[in-house]
Length: 82
Image (tube, rainbow, N blue to C red; front, top):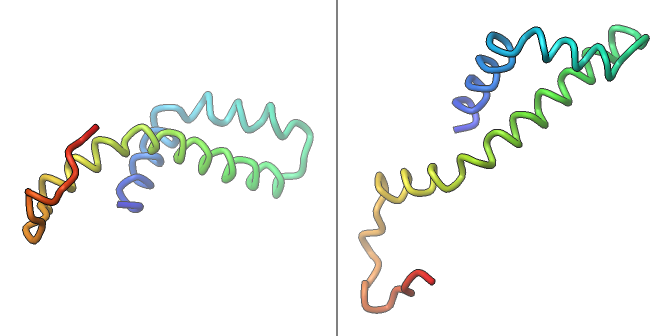
């Protein structure tokens, strides 16, 4: 799952949003050495990836519940959703 989200992040940040992402990194790291610009870019990429993947949690949960049903559970003892 982490690999899939990483690839989606690379596609979105690296291809679709490259120019705005580079501008953001340059504005945050203005006048800094290249090593700090690289570190800031990595940090921002990871933060954006986490924020983007948090919204996918309910969908991934439903998908996994569909693909991997709980066959050992007794329906009479399960809690009903609130």
